[in-house]
Length: 404
Ligand code: TRP
Ligand code: SF4
Image 1: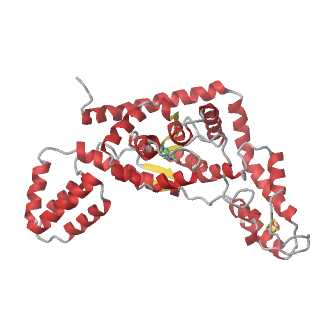
Image 2: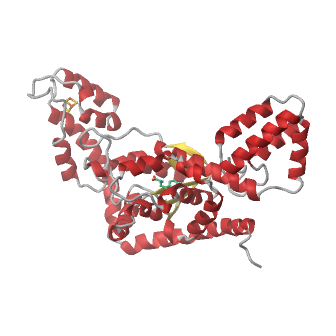
Image 3: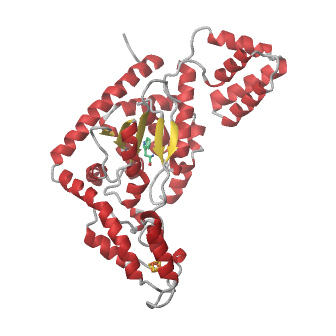
């Protein structure tokens, strides 16, 4: 949803994990660089989100934040186009998080898949905390604060965006109704007849009070089946289910980042925690060594043993990096033992190093000038606070904390 005539806003955040790798570049940053050309973008370091799981490691946070920001800049994220900031430096996020938490049913949070998944995955950490359960509310605050219409995220984040939409709807429902709206809706309910009216009320309560999303679908079906109400009333009752009044917080859409999963040096998904990553700032020497040491199809023991690219992690990198004619050369050469694995890797090494060249140049420039980086972020935080404060003035008015 977006207001016509208004430029689309994009918001996205990244937890500060330190230096980024090629997976981040292909999966996220290339996309940000593209989006910043077309939309008004807010990109931020989600440092509070990092603390929901890594609250016991304050020392590395600072370093991770600056390393990540430098990598963003190195990839071409442009502070002249996008607003770059750090979440915790815009305290409005905490205030909105708090206010949204008042209206978010516990059951909505407990059913977010990442809640249980992450607790299982990070068993060694104590994650039965208020902050961790509330992670998606904080994320909703990040997004709704800027009235974003689009949030570029990976697949794992889609449930969080859905929850953000539900929270926005509930907020608008509670605080955005216009006068006389309720009476009109009540009159429309009565026109449906006793049985349907009763069911409609039950479903509406189930949705607004317990957040039962199945109830809202059933209510829509019920309304669709009513033939004795006018189109206007039907629309009113649709709206009445979830607010239907003024939009105070805009519902965002998730924009799935389409990118191939980048394999790591061992063929598994590239990830810092698997130790199989090529960092953005790895120098050509390290890239060359790491690629040369990569495992290949085990069938190719000797130079003249033919192989099968499908069984080789190096091939997966070719799939991301190489042009069609290079790929054809690999398939032909590998399956006939026409090329050796080192030849095959060499062509890959060259494209990866060429791609990194410009990023390295910029990374060097920015790491040599920490003041510049701090100023970029300071400006971004200031701009973000201005926009955030606009939203908060409205939100405070809605909930009644704007004293006069
Ligand atoms: N949860 C996101 C992640 O782990 C990071 C994040 C925090 C985010 N707030 C956000 C992403 C707002 C998009 C919008 O990747
Ligand atoms: Fe892998 Fe290339 Fe060797 Fe084939 S030739 S096994 S694709 S590295």
